[in-house]
Image (cartoon, rainbow, N blue to C red; front, side, top):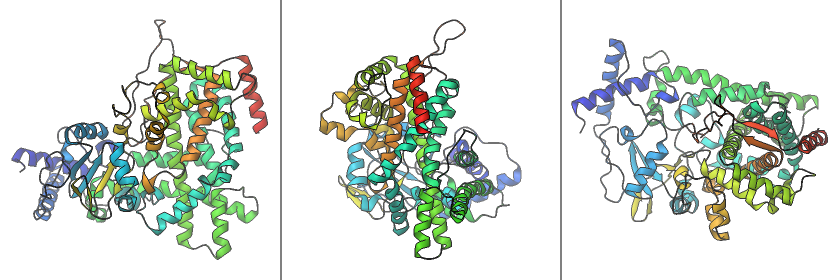
Length: 549
């Protein structure tokens, strides 16, 4: 039972949640109560009392066959035990205490935490029919307008969008057709790094965005100041600052979405309405650009034009299909660019901290490819150590530590435990890539670990097969993302040296291997020196730029 003191803290925390909407002040709060006026304080008391009465008939399932987990308290369940950031570390601690599968209660919602690859494969892969749904993301999907494939529950609309994206990113001929774009954008990336190496992060972001913008909309990105990229990045930034998928109070108490926008505590709705305008603009502007180009006969081949042409051949374009095409094209940017940026920036950090790894990869390229040309796709199989470096980058800093939650559509039984229907299922990908049994000394960046595995173990433990998701929710653009990342890493290794900045005392400045906590795990800002390996490299990059123009 809650004590008088803990009930007071609960009131303050619920008040704070209902008044704010930023990611740093979302569901999992810490610290003391904020300052507030008496009217809002009374409203908070009334709100908690009403919710408590509503929940009075609710009981946590008492069956002994639920998976083990920390003891919940009335109303909150286990919410109060979750840290505000880096929940993956707490989940791993519980995994060590209770086992690979942990049961939590988040308010009214049952949650299953999966901390091992074996359990993830058993449930999310082998029983995907039961585990392929999504929780209801009220804030993101309903209030902010992120009505996209990654948030759809499993059904006909999900399958239609998935089929569209798969045809563009899993068909072999389609993937081959993107290679000229990838080569051209690599040449732009390398040229930018040689001209303004201190701006390596904007150059990486431009590379990732340019690939998707051209494939999705036929739009060629000429600079980091591109209007469409600016809108997309603004939509992403505003969204992240407003809450995480499935973790806001309104996601657990959907009736809160019906609060009048002027009502005390409805600040999250006001913020969501502002974000929705930016999100809608991100969907609408490039779509209208493609539609106008098609009308004038100047449209470039792209994903959006292909879908519009397909629909128009069958009849008129309904509002439903227009929204679906906007959604399918729009999700490509958010799903692909951020992951690519994370991996490439993590790679640069890893090479900065481990120059011996970079030197070994450079020696392999020099030995296999030579110094008279730059690497290309056909060289990939002959560069096994480089492949291991990329695997280790994915493992060392998995891009999305907890993935996007799944949801069970019906009850299930596993290892003698009951898993309730409508449970939120969270795969702790970060913990899987930190499993000491599979990856000894997991905190150490050591690509050689993959060379020491046999073929079967390598297939099972390749972090790229974990990072892109499980079952029917695995990322359909995995092959394209993988090839774009490989091409960038291979060219960076072949063309540049990455070294530490020297401090005022003349000593090298070594950045910490730290990552920003959040839905996506970006490296914390760091500085480095990027220089061409030789004068010959500068000429090769110039030649590549001319050939790809």
